[in-house]
Length: 424
Image 1: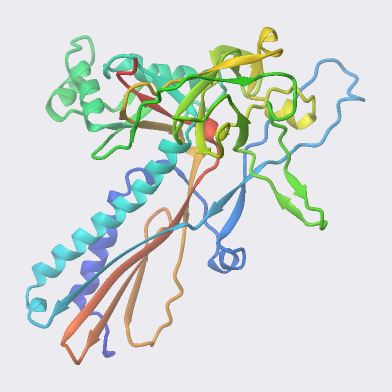
Image 2 (image 1 turned 180 degrees about the horizontal axis):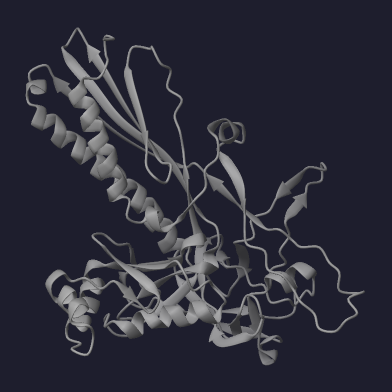
């Protein structure tokens, strides 16, 4: 056996840790996974551009002479930006207690799984652009059905939808379900006994033991909706620098100018008067104001938002392809009110279509034979966990560490959103 090799008990413990780690990845199991070899990622500075879905245009009639055009393929950067490590030491006497070692491994895997889940939660909570404002406390079907209606109206796939609710909001829904005698007795009993909700209005529901909170926005602003560049966004796949270099463009964001950014914070949700959401495929207006999120505050009057305002006012092929709003005729000639939607500080309940978010497994290349014993294992999604052990003869202390590495990419913010309750 090599100097720092793992014992049979430690190998079994690592298998248990890996299994528990996979079971704890509740959020990451509900997103897409993109695997890329570690050499390519390292050579691209740990960033890869991932394509957004194409949207095709169709025309009527038989003569298509003037309708031929190229597709504009948009893409977004995905980066291996997260890592989690759980290091600990055990003395020669502590190693006499195998149960103690097992408890430490359980604690480590729980925290690492939590780190992965929190990274997904933060991305979804801050970048999802569909905002469902509920004026009362969570009550059940009608709440989730409001999210379903918005996603259906905007042409988002009806399968693979998930919503994650804070414990209090989830339990409020379970309470409503538990009192519905007209439902199947088994489902009603589960709601009463285990506060279990399950599928509602096409969404699989999940209970969070932690949830982000969003503060209240307390301001009123205006912005121009004139037919002028800067008020709307023109998607472009690439941009050529003055040096002739071509680079990809991230079209998830747009900088806009408003009357004042005082009291506006990143994460705030808002609507613009006269700017209505459209079905992403048919381009027909939904009759509902488009919701936007503040990504960053850039100056006293400028802020970056998502999604961009693609109204097809510029008339380019790319705008026609990716149009996401229509502006009422009367609102194209002046200023429009910006109305903030998160009016009461409360929990953020994210929801998304599976393809909206991707997780990218990362890897460590640790040299073999360098003194430490190493084991590796992967979850079903490809997230790799490394387990290392090193014994120090001077102190009779053994060092252990667990590591994992990953990235999270909000590939399509318009297929993800948040729900907030008790808003005025």
